Image (tube, rainbow, N blue to C red):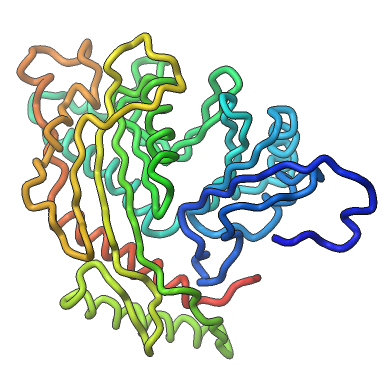
Length: 351
């Protein structure tokens, strides 16, 4: 992200842009914005950044005004750009640029919401009409005061004309833990979700992956499909990576995967409060599954976290555990996401 010629023809006010990112690799395996710190001229830096190739799972923080954020957001909307997403933290005067979710990111966020929903549907003491009112929302955007944030997804209960946010989910792939914690805390404190669930994933990368070239799309698909099949066989020896093909590591070993829950202790807490997790479980450590003793409901998730208690009858049914977490479910979903992510990194793409 160096300065281009001609940009310094007139004096400009300089400012610092902190770039915090979840992963420095696009799905096609190339590098985009990866430096942790840059100083740029005040030349609508935010607009310049969002128009560059953004890697999957990238999370950038740019010091800027709310006015400039709104202007750039309007420009993106007029172009009907789906990514990157823009948010704004009014407490720190920072725009947040979010790249498209990687395959692993999307699978884990959707998988958490989907498996919790399926557990609700298994409950015998709840009518189908009530169960039908529980839906999933993805890529939420909400504004409170001067702050606008998005989210990976949530379970929403439709109570007449009113949507009640029940469980929010955030997944971070190599994202800073503090930014992931801030995102889920916002959902709980500002949006009043009953419960927040965050998954923090750390992948060990082995440097840049080489540029791949194929004579045709058909050859590309055949080559990637063959590699993905090879990757699946590698799980017998390395259940959480690395995934290697012809000496190249296309997906690194999972150094750590942690699952945490967040619940508001006091309804009067301000929206920007940074919560501490109420439960924290390590699922994967140094490439090995270590979550053998994780309770299926994380020692916390119950039916009233998905359906408001005024809809349910009786204290016993309200406290029914939702046993959604199981090793087989987690491992199959996680490994499928790793394989697809590795395969995507083998595909060519624009610089």
